[in-house]
Length: 317
Image (cartoon, rainbow, N blue to C red; front, side, top):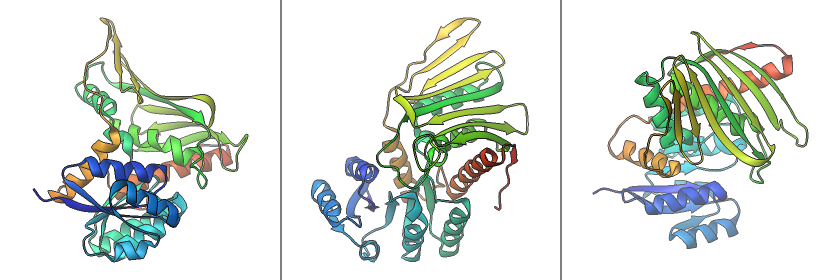
């Protein structure tokens, strides 16, 4: 069996998770890691048995690297991604795809021009609970969707330094709602602000879709305990998901029911999908366009919060 030779750029908390998962996948071989912090790169290389670099270009110049995942700060995504593209490496860029929708488009266009394949790390797409909710919606288990409501709150994460709560947290649920409905929101209204931090640390976002559906997203870095929940209100019942436990509950006229399915690590499923798509030449489940559109909606929400009025969602692609 052919194994995809992969490398991880950025050896912070999430990059180390990427390295760990790649070591666990039979279809992948972790060959290199890099980080601008030499000590961190050295430690990651030693821990996961990979060559280490403190210079991304030295890693990208290696002929035995088929693909890379980029786990650097969001503000560096465009620069690092375009470097990888210029070296002809297929890549996965962690969300958000870039620090702005404009930068995201530049990455997408560069990848298309170079015939390089681009995936974006919207991990909740691979959450088995989310997949179950989508299946229930598509089979009409509790009728048609009326409202999707999410709550994604916790304390300020130490790892964040270059984006606010909308592009770091709320963007997950923006993408999940697009995924579950297979539709794009047409209008956004949001209230957001900063109580303790440089960037916005709380946001309340309403997404209006072209048909009857609406989405409501609450996200903040002010809540002392972590909550990750989704409620889907339908015409004949309610579906509730705990993103963390992956438990799905269906409530309708027949009572309450919790479908049984196996908990699986979303990151492992995501990186397995990335590897398999490249090895089998299949379309990515989350491509550059998905990353760009989620980012565009997040920016529309931020614009709405500043203006105090709803904002139409538009895309350049």
